[in-house]
Length: 345
Length: 251
Image (cartoon, rainbow over all chains, first blue to last red; front, side, top):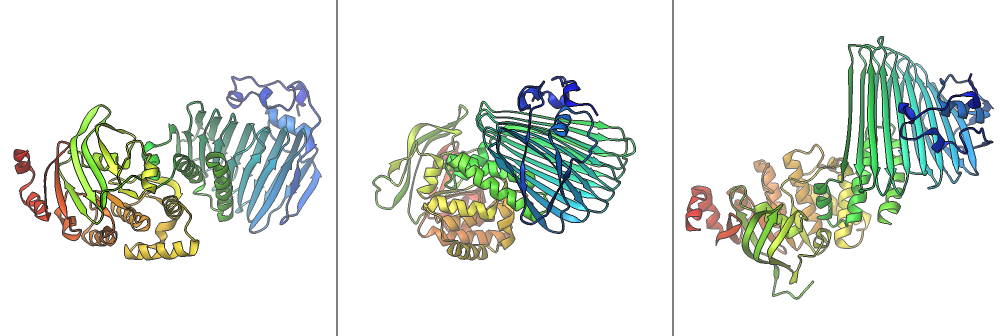
């Protein structure tokens, strides 16, 4: 496997790094492999086994090569029935961790990422076994100065069902590269991402979903509400192999622009090799709807309260199909508290 | 608010209103006192909804001349939410859908805003239950998103549910009867009547059938941005029978 210092650095012509160059999210300088500490990972309701670092096939992406070298161990979760809550705490200069989930039944895992580290590397991997169901929620509430590099690799086996919900609220600069492979027939993946951009926050989500087998289904919903001078990026890469007949896949990116200076990009891309498939994608960016604002204000809500309610509704709407009630409710609660602080004060 | 003349709630004098440079209301006068029900009828495009929206303070409507006094004060500079908190309510002809916001959450926040404090949860639940029963609304409404996927009739019931909860001083009801079947119309009319005694009501409608159930004190005919005729309930009956041509001829 290529070592980081021998790897060639990506240029901005690459789809993945177009909007957030690697140099802007590296913890120091790109020609350095700095010392990186461990994220603190705790749970009161699930045993976390720590082992020497697992060997994960991840391709030659620079962020994964980097994380593979700086992380020394893997935290392995084997969740049972019901929901498990995992706290990921980031302190110090630069910290990272590799967390791997083996799903063999119907399980839910709720990650809560917080702390004030300057740089955080989070590598999530998982295998959703045959006929297993896994729901994962991740709430990012890092401090407003943190840089986050997140890479995910998920594999869904035959008849497996995987849903992944992300609520991205914290951090200054975020680069997430989330990849899911539907390697078994009749497997399903639904992914929901809600982003609140505020201040000068830069939040870049790249989502790859790869259908390898027939009768596979996927859905991606990305809703980003951008305020102040924030910048949200959503790029999707949906690949349907020629064997993956009778696949049904859809991607939708929506951006709500709350200020003149906020920016948002939404670029879904499809590569469809099979011919008996349904594949749809859409992207839209718009300011707050003035009819909705007028309606809420005519019910006594101030401009700030009406804005907060519309933003909350817009972001909550991205989670409406999350099957796990616990994850959906946890995200809504955090979102409400966050918006009350940010938009109403 | 300013000094009121008796039970006067709304006084509109020589009102001229434009939308994106187009003049819609052209010299309208109207006074509504507490306890009175005024009906406004008129053809499509006469300015009925514009009147309701400009009184509520919609920012797209520009007052080019004249005044609107509410409870004795000129409200031209008053924000929409301040008008609501001062007891003004508009039942929208086309209420906006708010995805992701549950009806229950919306009602609780709205009531808290208008009353100035959050109602005690237990009392509010009881109040809500009673109002919903009055309107034959199922409790499952509360967990649905505001107006999203609602039928026309469901939207209008939600508007009247808000009327019952907010107990306004002035209610502007913009075609609240449109899209309702006979049974729903009766239920909605009972809701309006239950708040009308202590409220000033402006009922905008195309149809006499609502005015059979919500008895107006005064009926006005709006033509081309002006009130051209006012009278008792018999005026609505005449319009139903004869249309607007005769009023136009008089004007």
